[in-house]
Each structure stands twice: as structure tokens, then as C-alpha cells.
Image (cartoon, rainbow, N blue to C red; front, side, top):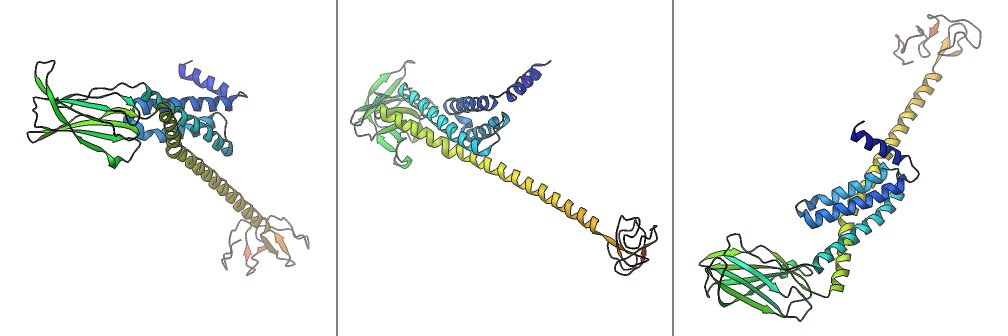
Length: 327
């Protein structure tokens, strides 16, 4: 027996157990939470697929293990997406709490050693920003770009930096150190970036995380709230749309089946009600009768008459050869 056969046998046993629904719900919570954290924290390039994947797993895993009732499935979804949101918020908070500033540089290495100190503070603290322009001079236009993740993306800060002094780098080249500091940052979590215009050429670093300018307690509450909101407006919406779609499809199939049954009954009833005229006494005779119920005359294949024009018909005829009446 192959490994896949063993897995199928095990799953079949689980589905037949009394705890199958609870096992399915627990497995769904575990799988969706791990998938969400993995993609959000380490596989951001496929984050756009995350809501679809989670919604599909949240619907089909419990259903596979026996949770067929859509009302109960919808209630389970509330718990599931709350757990996903809180887990995501807690993970984001831990990444903020323990982060260390990573030095920034540009792709062409004209800007290096871009950093900020301290990495965390509260409104009113002074934050020092610095970057080295390689082979630069005191006249270059060096800029600090700051984005507040808690604020309006259009309100990014563009701050001019001042030349401080020349420094010798590890490769023995000379660079110009540019610095600036500020104590007027609004509360929030920031991303910083450096850019420089030197000799008519613009160069910029990648974007880095920091500084955190808020109390960690508020960062935690905001992270949890953001995680829950993201979970419900991106994942839960698709999950409940899927429930509605499958409910509508099942309802449509049920209606179609009922209509087919009704048509079959009408057709059967119509066939049972079809009658002919006795050629001896003129009484109406059921199609499948062997003799007239009124006069007792026995019929052969030639003794039926059309109820509309009285033409003689065979028992196997489906319509009158004379007037065209369907029988």
C-alpha cells in the first residue's frame, strides 16, 4: 500500500469518527493561521493570493470533515477570522518590538550606511538620520524621505540633509557624511529612505523600516486591530461570498430536480388519463384497457377510435392519422 493510500485511509477513519467536525475545525484554524503568517511575514510577493487561499481552505476543510450546515459554518468563520486577525496582529507587533535598523544603500552604491538612531521612541524624542554619499561633496542635494504608516501616504516628509564631514570608507574611498535630526515626528511607525542629486544624477536607497515613534502598548493595540480588520475585510468577505454562492447553486439544483420530478408526474398523469372511444357503445375507454368497462366489448388493435374525429386507430398510435390529434 502506498503512502497516499495510507493517508486516504487515515482521513477516511477520521471523517467517520465522532470528533471529525472538531478535528476539521481545529485543522482549519491551524492551517489558515500558519499560511497567513508565512505569507505576510516572509512571502510578501504572493500576498495578493492570500485571501483567496484562506477563504477556500476555511470553507472546504471543515466541509470535508463533515461540517455541512452552512449556518454553523458561518458561525465558525467568525471565530476563525478573529483568531487569524489576532494572530497576525500579534506577529506584526513582535516584528516591530524586536526589530533592528538595517543600513540602507543604493543599487549603484553611491549612497551607503543610511541609518537612524534611536530605532524606537515616543513623540518628542530626537531621531538622528545619517547617510554617506560616496565620492560626493558638500554641495550635493541629499534628501531624507519619511513615510508614516499610521498617517496619510500623501503626507510623506521630504527633509533636506546637511553636510557634516568627510569619512573614509572600508574600501579606502572618501565619502561625504550627511545628517539631519528631528524631534517633531508625529506618532506612528515610519519607513525611511535616502535620495541624492549629485552632478545632475539622482540616486536613492531602498526603503527601510523605522523609526517606531509610539508607545509599545499602543503599537500592540493598533497591530491587533489592524490584523482583525484585514482578516475580515479581505478574507472573511470572500469566505461568506463562497457560502452564498454554494448555497445558491445547491438551491438551484434542488429546484431543477423538483421541476423534473413535477414534469415526470404530469407526464405520467397525462398518459394515465388518455382515453379512447369504444367502437361499440361510444363510451370512453382508458388507453391500456383490453375491454370496454361499459359494454364489455373486447378490443383488438383495430378497434380504437380517435376521440376527436372517430377515425380507427392502432393501440400503438401516438397521434391520429386523420386529424393529427396527439394521443
